[in-house]
Amino acid sequence: MVSSSSFWSGKRVLLTGHTGFKGAWATLMLTTLGAHVTGFALPAEDEENLFDLTDCATSIESHIGDLRDPSAVSATVQAAKPDIVLHMAAQALVRRSYAEPLLTWQTNVDGTLNLLEALKPLPSPPVVLVVTTDKVYRNDETGRPFKETDPLGGHDPYSASKAACEILTESWRLSFAERYGIKIATARAGNVIGGGDFSEDRIVPDIWRAVRGGYKLELRNPEATRPWQHVLDCLFGYLLYIEALAQNPNVPPALNFGPAGGNPPTVREIAERILNAVSSSSRWAISGQPGPREMLKLNLDTNLARTSIGWADHLTEERLVDWTAEWYRAYAEGADMRAFTLEQINTFLTIANRNQ
Image 1: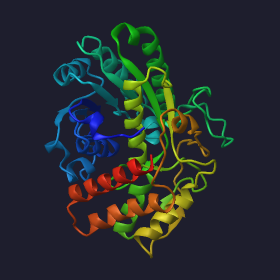
Image 2: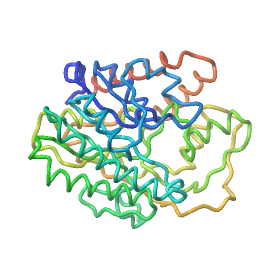
Image 3: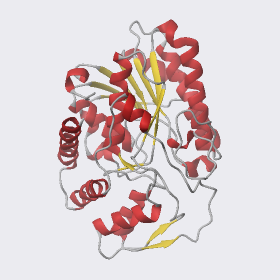
Image 4: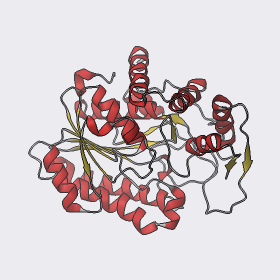
């Protein structure tokens, strides 16, 4: 299966979370494929952010609002009349979820329900993909790759709220989807990296700030493992999944997206690779600051996505690091970052469609 403009051209897409890191990449990828995008999200949090650096707002209908406000969600849905809903908006940071558990639960669970309920009155039922996380599984810290059939759980408020979002979406699908003609599924993605991420508590932005500020990078859990993947590989999986949902009634209702293989690199390994790619003089140290508990081992089994919808990751190993480092180097050199980001997207689409 190939994600192409023949499917996406002219499609009305409601994209939640469009002002975030993944959301901005998704905005540009969707518009490149010819979709008409309506975005719904809070304002971009960081003064320095990919959404503004790439002038995303000029390409779409951008609505600034809060998922916790059902009237704002409903008004946007009615204005967009989407063929497709890609729901990525969330409170997505583990450490922040400890500080703001109420906000996290309300956004990730109540906000998702507000969105799904707003779809019921639409005259033409959309295809819906709800994005959750690789952290929805009950993590026994063995490092074994989680399959879609494994039990859901979550220790921290973020992970638990996303597991609850999975349960909510499944309940809504079984209770209402057939009645309203809506096709709905969930995507569980690994840790994504790529250019243009400036968020707090994420490895690549932390590296970028350390290099630019001339100080030593601090790592909280250097031996923790995560299923790292490039943001474009992840988003390409979402698009393929949506195409499959639209065309095939037998597509699984949940899929994992992450790198192939059973031995994901550690935080230390990925940090050292990116540090070496962007600066020859930067080094790291273990953070001395205590923090809330974070899972040390995390891995995904992504065979079902590969066999059921024909997805594959293309920016692996050296490419994963190189493409990320190239973006930040271009940014540091004052390049036109909209043009550079679009160039990476077009190059990726060429590679992915050639290899599918």
